[in-house]
Image 1 (cartoon, helix red, strand yellow):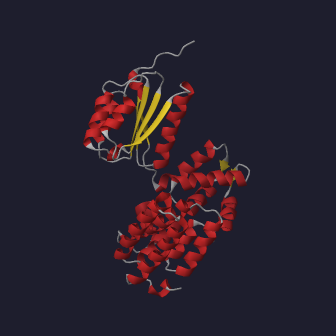
Image 2 (cartoon, rainbow, N blue to C red; image 1 turned 120 degrees about the horizontal axis):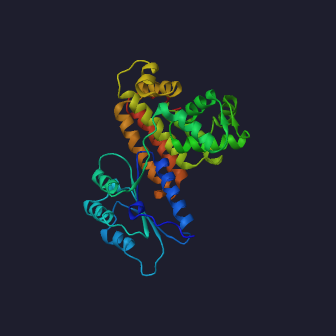
Image 3 (cartoon, rainbow, N blue to C red; image 1 turned 90 degrees about the vertical axis):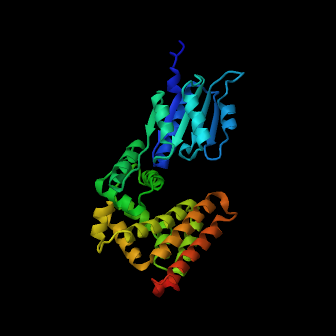
Length: 332
């Protein structure tokens, strides 16, 4: 029996919000649904930044050969005005044989485009930022999705150990459930991270933030030899700098005030306060630039990501020493 016809407006979809992991999952769900209904569908994914209107028009043009198409346009918050206008115009008369998904990273840029799609009847997947005080709920949902169990104290321990990156948290949940038979308690978290404590991205970041150049390089090499992905190490370095910078941006004298201000767990607040006191504002600004450059390098811009990581580690420690705070540990 043929499926009931789907109104054209259901062929429009908006995926919007600040959480990249949730956006990618929403797009994956749409892709799976389209392929389930149209196994031979053509798949197109286009980045809005720099996308020519003519290229978009070619992908959205009626097909001479029939068949369904899934078109995903990512980063529409960065699209030029002409492209946003073209997408808005298409939404007024969408092709029933095309599922068009626009992905927006949140914020006000090109917000009118989202409103136009919603007014045209687009389905909406909201992917709002997960705040620090919501990370426990995210972990519990991940565990349930994997069919496992986790204790309340293990949730807290895991968030403190991993931090607020959703991809890292999801990966940690998957690994722990696999290693400990589908059930996670605080002891399991402690044993897992005790075994990795000297060779993970956060250990590298801690050495860097304290100015221990030799120690940071040593732990970095252990981590890389142990198979820790370069992207995760780069993310940990960026997180360490961001945490110190945020702590330095507010006038507080205790980690308890940071916990209340940013809803941070105790361990993160203690670390943030310690490093904020040791680094200068100028040093942190320079370190942010280094981590931004490193992010691109480990995602393909560098011919040798391992070398890029070691160079960034040495640069950050040198910055800490040169900007006048923490010279005691800088040369160790």
